[in-house]
Amino acid sequence: MLVTLASAKGSPGVTTTARVIASVWPGPSVLVDADPAGGDLSLWSSAPDGTPLDPDTGLLTLAVEARRGAVQLEQHVQRIDGGLDVLCGVQSPGQVASMGPVWPTLGGVLRAHPGTVVADVGRLGPDSPAMPLALDSDVLVLVVRPTIEGFSHLRERLRWLTSIDSGMRALPALGIVAVAEARDAGTVRDLEQLLAHEGLRVPVLGTVAVDQRSADVVAGRIQRGIDRSLLVRSARQLVEPVARLAGTRRYAQGGVA
Image 1 (tube, helix red, strand yellow):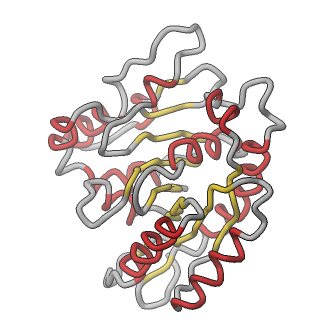
Image 2 (cartoon, helix red, strand yellow):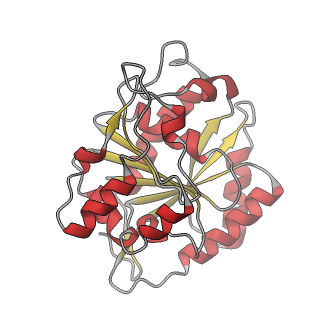
């Protein structure tokens, strides 16, 4: 299963949300840093023995192998302190450009992995190199902050995504996650009302709690001290609706993949 997280604009918390969801996902999971703007996973994390991750092993080496044919994802994954397997991202615009012909094939490679793959593609727009990967996902989750500008950009991005004509190609199921204060009970309701008013039938899956202290220490499988935090508890509540939505991957004509 390939779960992709993205934003319509800005930095609403996609990276933290992807990381914590991958960390609490039941069963084997891999976190993929696929943000074309530049990956920071290798900067945030270290290996179990405390040594730095190799920033040159990950998405870039996977792309090199993909050009040659068969790809073994496991050969490009590194394990970080806490036990989570990760695929480090690109480090420079030149590396992004060099991957150009490979981006359309990455979705199939990641979906073929026997576990769950959670990919962070950053800001998603028509010009994003990661767009083919996002459109090849089982589920594409847009992360948004509950602000006027956040809702506005989300609305426009959803209008565009729901208008894509894929022919017979399967499209990802679409969902929304809001990053909001735990006490902000009206965020989901406000989002649902906005979408209904615009005629956008995209489910709001829930919220990720704003919890800066926990966000600062999230690394791999959840570290001691934050496993009962608002951030982690809210992420656990998203696992089931995200997994269920992934099973509805749709065709433009209304079929299911």
